[in-house]
Image (cartoon, rainbow, N blue to C red):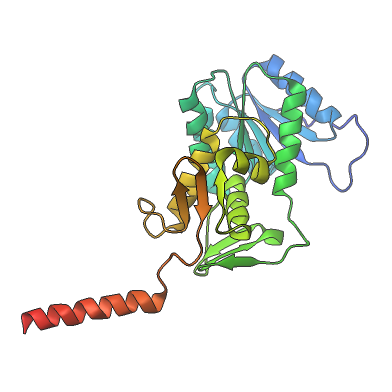
Length: 263
């Protein structure tokens, strides 16, 4: 197993983020590790999935740069197993530009993806962007609506008091919707406002809206909170979820009607 690359750049404030680079191509891994090391990060490398999982268990990384095409266990399975152990940001590397591959990576919990061949400087910028978003916001207090609450300092979200297992992007998207209810946002708006990107694959937004709906909507097939605005994008509508008393009243009314029909 590779030893971490010490930073050759200026000292960072606090402990340096630890990055795990998983790629079976030693040249790619060497270049990526070198650029990340010079940017001030501690970098470990693993050539395959099982080694990466062992390393992540022994030395929890702050972020994982993960190749999709790995021998034996592919990057999708590695990402799934990493996500099962807890929230860790993942940037997926793929040699193919196929949209299906990118969406699969996002579906299993990757926070970003970069298509090979790529600029190492761009990858460093992506890494630093994801790390910034993953840091707790100590100045913000918990807020929410409709039984949903987000706690930015703790990076924690709950629904009716039950904690939600959200990826980094899903958390940011939910927080943005809760802060900006009632307005329609295009997918381009969401990419720019939520994740700070002026370019990228708009299917990223579609995938994360679908994943978020699956976790916060009572019926994701008929969403009440995250509404689709045809020809525009999406709008968060607080107050669209039936209140508990309303649901109870409906159930009681149904019971009375059924009893009346039997009488």
